[in-house]
Image (tube, rainbow, N blue to C red; front, side):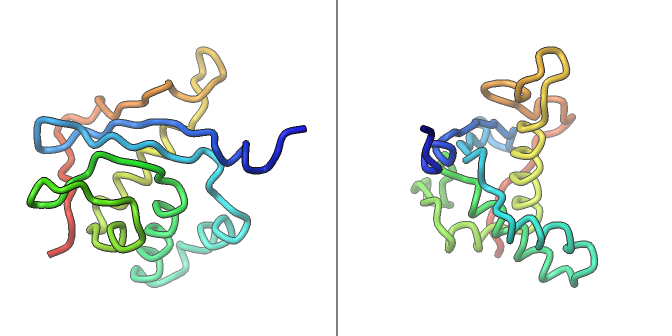
Amino acid sequence: MPKLTQLRRETGEVEIPTAGDDPLRITYRKAFVSPALSKRLSNADDLPSTDQLAILADLVKAAVVSWNLTDEDDEPMPVSAASIDALDAGSLQVIATAIQESMRPDPTNGTDSSPISSATERSEPVPIGTRS
């Protein structure tokens, strides 16, 4: 019989273009939206923007397993609550959107968008950064 932990291990990958040479590569957990998070997401439009940002950060915290993000000194940033809380709102939105888009079914074969989904249709790179 399948175990809950097995479902939680299924991951996907997404690449997000950045202003630098390398894209942001993220491995995310496919089964990351709990009923509690789903309820918070469904009510987010009625909340103040600070609460919406906290929900978005919680979504990214629940989803991201690994990434190649580094700080200003080129040191790897751990996937942690502190690192995710240090991201600016735009970066959180870009990451959450890329994950959600990569999970959408591919109409040509009924599976996820691709093994590694890329946001290449954007006309310009998206800067990823931390709050100042």
